[in-house]
Length: 116
Image (cartoon, rainbow, N blue to C red; front, side):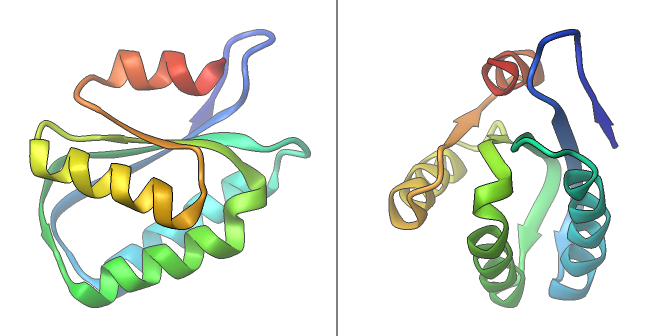
């Protein structure tokens, strides 16, 4: 679930698909959290939403709570989606959470930003 290049910040990748329920997100984030906790320094978190169709309000609330709790362990958070509306949602979440968070349309650009 994580990979890195020499001297780059470690990156943990989360892939979300189809309709995202709170239960599904909890399982996915538990795996991500275990990967994040393996690193002493804060990591980059790449959330790939390209194959995600929709999400429950409960899933969104759980992500906000989880991110608030994990924020000090995540140096940067990139969300990859081709949906322009979700780009605006991510930008709003970044302001509200004070998390260094940015939307991207391409994995390579997100990964490059995270590894810096």
